[in-house]
Image 1 (cartoon, rainbow, N blue to C red):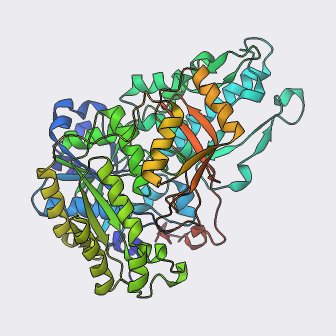
Image 2: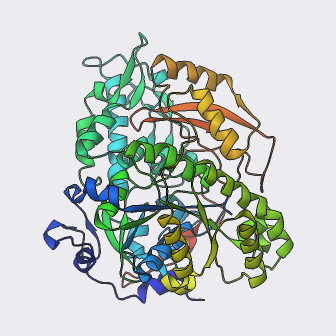
Length: 556
């Protein structure tokens, strides 16, 4: 079978100025990064056009560890919409090097539904992740410098510092570290650690900012810790937010690239959905809506994770509402939730598909709780049988939900025409906006319980002593009216990755609640979720190589 990277290389790329011309963007407005990548200036965003254009959200059922092809379907759907005469663009997140070198591999779609140049996008792209790392770690360095100095310090109690460091790599050995060793000239020893860059609050801030001024303000609102006399310290108190914003002056601009069919694509920001809010930037989405009539965008992982945060956090901050919502389902994921072993997912098994359908049904229910009318896309894999796909389509008819197979990997936009027509019909019937699951003014506990109860199906929430103490701190800081961004495993509707299918009557345990006051949300951490992932036994990096001519292989 031809690999994704071979299919990508078979495409004759157009110069990025040709792609921009399709959006009526003059060449002089492009910030060029070579022939095939460019950044777009924020002045191209039109608030009037944003209100008129239509937003399409793509989410998924609970995935297998390898994912269900949400990005591929999002790209394919945008291609399909263009094929039926709609001016459409796909707006996506940037890939993190953690998954690229870890278990999932690249995140630029697959087959004939990709964004290009896939090697560049999957690796360093335009340097946005590097800029976020630098801005984040600048604050880390300034905090430790302030603690170290006897003069011009804020009296920060190092035991209360909540700010960690980040790097864009899966490295479990850095989860907990000691800094400041080596004597008095090397800093004050204290315990800290690393998170992956996709979980950085700076990443979230970039993705939830309106412009550079707003970005600088939000960076200043980052909570750092307390002084010895129990006064809260924020990044603005360290006079560092201006320098952090300066490091992000280019990273705030969204990136323009192209698809395998030569249509425009915008890629910007990359927070994970299991440990962050899982959506591309507000700026990128507004840019897409300004330059096109239809925008296809995705939210990370399954609906109860990324899509819930997309709606309850991103859309409410941005004043956006999707006109259509697509739920990606796969035969292999439903077999997995029906009890099939991961190694057996390619083998036909209609009964396992049927047993896994309650997971699909729950996600459909969740979409309807937001007052959204779902369209199901059955993302076709080469191992799927017609009988297995028919079982899913039959269930969707029973639920009264329009559904279509999507062969976007094998056929590109041609494999998404039926899906595009269903989505276009759903958009024509779009009435009003979505209904949030909770109100921001509610107590923090009530917000957590609303999400866990309505979205996950939990019976009860258990708070550890640490989480209870965090709740008191949040209230004392006056931050209890912020929305919540629950960190939870993506492998289950519950906080236990072993509970597949549609678990019921389970208890969700909140271990602690982190404060992301700069981003503008609180992060209840459940189960054993880690904000710094580890590499698998055989990481994808084992397959990646480069030859003497600079040709990269192994990026799937």
